[in-house]
Amino acid sequence: MKNNKLSDFIKIRIQIGKSFYIGPGKVILLENIDTLGSISSAAKKLGMSYKKAWRLVKEINSASPNKIILTNTGGKGTGGAKISNEGKKFIDSFRNIENKVLIEANKEKKYLYKIFEKKTTEKEYD
Image 1 (cartoon, helix red, strand yellow):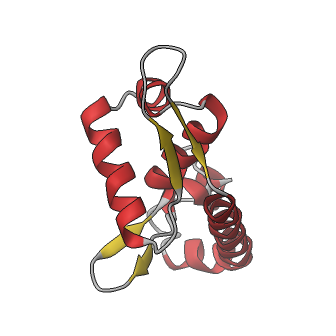
Image 2 (tube, helix red, strand yellow):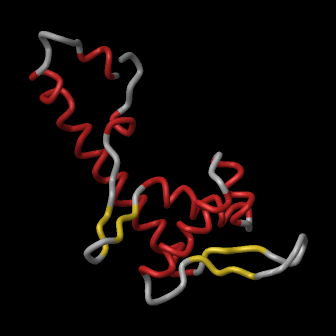
């Protein structure tokens, strides 16, 4: 387990309402849609089917009173997607929460690894 970082083990998942969860996978999709301007291009870059990407887009937009992903229907050159200002704020907030959790977890890392020192060494996790 050499060269493992806490970010490899700790994943933030936020529950909104009773049944909607958003975690790093959906946030990465949002970030790629924002960067690439296309759901299709974002899905392709992530190795995700277009159908799955669209399902996630609908799920994300359905969970919010304001659209997070804005789409423009059309063919090549006329279609596209972008992230709304509300969506960009959400991405920033999610990443801030994620960073704060990792900073705090890193402070406790040595203690956590001491618990298991008979089986492993801290060097394996640095």
